[in-house]
Length: 267
Image 1 (cartoon, rainbow, N blue to C red):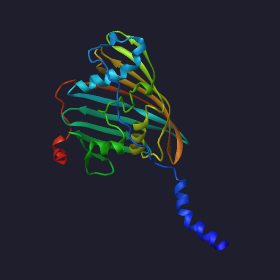
Image 2: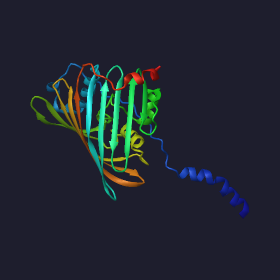
Image 3: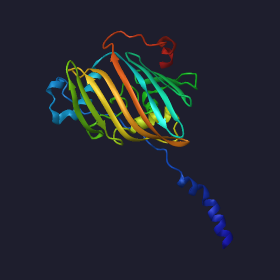
Image 4: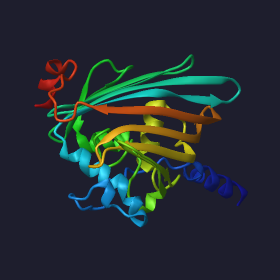
């Protein structure tokens, strides 16, 4: 009888161990901003509807055939040692869209470069060297988000993903502070951060504040993002991220870097 029990336990061991593993099953969520009135301006929006402003901004971005955004900032981690990770991103919306996302520190260096056209993506990470090609859906299932999705910096703009929107300044432009929900806004950002940052698990957010500087027609001028989160790469580390995004060249012709070298990969 004892021998039979031992044999049963041995036979069940692989299944018991599998059941103890933490499932890595986070799925990308579709970006679905609230449908808004395309003819309204910032001055038309009443305070009770301020939560719709991020959706108005996304709607306005989608109307432009082209624009460029430049991101610059850093993430400071406070684990056993204090580490500053730079953030530099260039993104171009055009017929062939483009983004290059670089992050460097004394411990980690990552570079992700991607082109997007006709629902397809051509991309590479620094370590891979060669470009890969896939459908945009397959790309997003791995990388979570990209600069031209129905979101702001990858964060969901659905009403339930936004805690509050407050107007903090009004002169030649309008400035709003958006506080995002730490869980409901971050699903796709978590996928991206885990993949590109090589994290052992998805980060846990504690604060997400985004300051939006816009024109009366909701055209974005700048984004200032400030977030706090916990990330795990061997050890759990508290991180504080701050960066600025500047938008320009709306509906202008913009040269996409090295486009001719990857066009054939879209065929």
